[in-house]
Image (tube, rainbow, N blue to C red; front, side, top):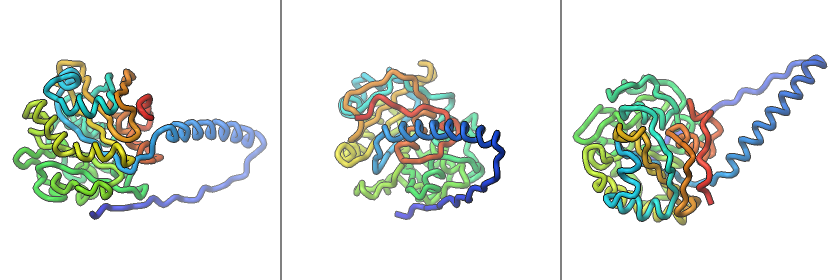
Amino acid sequence: MPFARIRDAVAPRSRRPLTALAAGLGLMAGSLGLWAATGSTAQAAALPAPDHVVVVVLENHAYSQVIGSSSAPYINGTLKAGGATLTQSFGLTHPSEPNYYMLFSGATQGRTDDSCVPVGSINKPNLASELIAAGKTWASYNEGLPSQGSTTCSSGKYAQKHNPWFGFSNVPTSTAFTFTQFPTDYTTLPKVSFVVPDLCNDMHDCSVGTGDTWVKNKLGAYATWAKTHNSILVVTFDEDNKLSGNRIPTVLYGEHVTPGSTTATTYNHYNVLRTVEDLAGLTSHAGNAATAATITGIWN
């Protein structure tokens, strides 16, 4: 499938003579820089390097409404039991759309409501632009999208407010696929992809059970495959039901995730974005992901 690839041009560094004092200060700064770079490299080295990461975003449910619920047997019985659960995972605001922008680009980009963003009106770093610049592949799979690259605001149960990539000028609209285009040969998946169900199957308009069944039926085969094929599935939510402090379910599953593990460290959308960037081997980090911690304690 056609994925855009764009590479950064790196300008050569200039060299200038230094006085003895400046040289000493430069040596000190260089030592600090080396320490920081080594620390960053060590952190990245502690993470797996999966071939594929698929992130699924569901809607408007609190942690307690899903985790431990009999209405979500697949999320609990398979993904949670066989993967890792972030027990203190949080959305960052209300309503939905700003959370999607934070998860994708590390900032709200000025979004405060659920209105349609003018297509290509934002030129800021984001997960997709970073992947493309690094020569890696990216795609989104949007249930209900009328056609690949369609920029319509809404159509049936499809809502563009849950698809932040359309707001950015540095993300080709051609990388937005319909969900029917999600490959059955998972080796052809891009390095990182987002999957966004429609307004019913994401639990926004329909029940927890409906969303749980959708994840099982549509992504269960990928989850099983990921366990033995160096790949990861991330299931998270945009926000809670506005009654639980924005504490949301987030579960990770795949070959490198310790089965049945949990972490009570407080994480949010910026941590998830930072972790996906690091799993993809990116050296750049969008917005607030640059200062967010990578998710740890769940990798085997």
